[in-house]
Image (cartoon, rainbow, N blue to C red; front, side):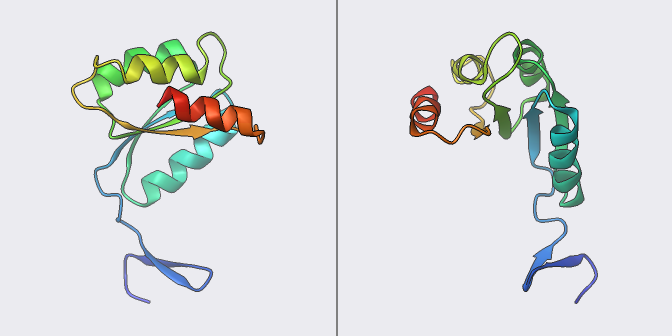
Length: 116
């Protein structure tokens, strides 16, 4: 294995493949947010963590993320409402939003798809 690579199973992964990617993690469980943060930073991502929807909306305009990892069930504004706000054209660029949820029912997936 070369320097800057790690092995995941039988796949070699370059450590800096996310170099400079700005990721906003919106998750109210600190241990989950920390796990995502460590993994993303290890691969070169620039990470900011928010634990509420209101915090995420405020931070997104300053941080200008490329990607938002967005929990669906949050205190205050839920993930659907946050996605709606973030995709409303208030940001300099439209981030890719990835829903994070423990919900496994189709209706939650459909609702996330409808929110953008």
